[in-house]
Length: 421
Image (tube, rainbow, N blue to C red; front, side, top):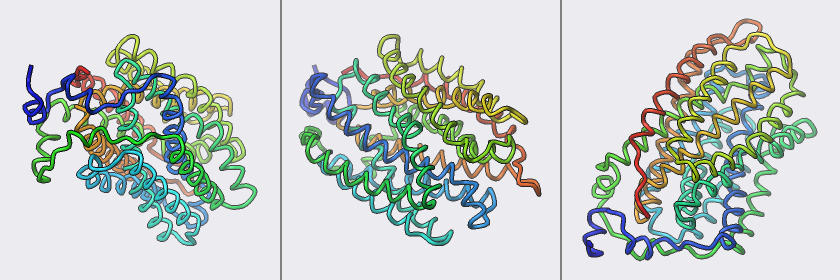
């Protein structure tokens, strides 16, 4: 067996290192930790998603083009990508709990800035600040998930945390839209500021101190740090997988609400049903995909979910006329499979790196993930245009490109290998 020093230098996984780094808990001990992480992830997801149904209102209020609205989406993602990149050099140098609480406070402040914005460029700046905190927050959440759960339960834990998407769609989005209708578009962001304060209190109370990774921390020059992450072929395939998935998803999803209203003819009062039904379905399917990944293998379940997701991607982007029920059915299938495929993908990605590098690796991963999402949104916005009546053109072309990217992600997934723990 390699000695500890050799293991640390080569980056190989070893039971000796894992036991000293990963404080695995029992299932009962894991539950409150995972619940808090899911709650904080709820803030992260809703902060991003809340802007999507506001598209028609903001485009009218600030007289925005599709390109300008896509920039509001992209600036969030680009900021998350840039901040996550630089955070990757320090994320493993701090107690996970303290770092998470700091980031949660930051995103609460950022949502307050969004609520106080009174013109387009101030809102753009506020979204940039929110994205910076949000990207690093997401990396920290999934790092803690991987740190506190063993590999054979990680798919289930990842699915539980990612079910925050379902909670946002079922509860958060309808409530947010209700607040918009009762007050203004600023109200949901004030709501998120309040929720952030609540989650900080719960995190202080329920999360254990997580500093086991500091025992094997190595002080490296940034160039050595980059080499440890990017000179590993397995890491590169994992990054490519997430980049392709995000490009496929975020070239389509930011424009669904606007397309449903301007092209399909849905009323704005019907939009909460779209998110409610999709979220209710994914509430069950996210956990299901996680459990299936643990039972039947992450590669297999990801491949099936990704292949099936091609159909709703093409369907939702090629709808020309449809009843409200058909539009909701197609969007629900889209949310189920597009979010569902991400569960085994993230479980696979978090298993592709040793625990001592996991925080930095996932921070780089979030950086690549968010940059890909930003590029996808800008790319889709550059392809599409609007008619004088406000209808969106060339959304079908975007759907075909997203479907091709999905197929490529399946091929990339088989190149990513989970390390033994």
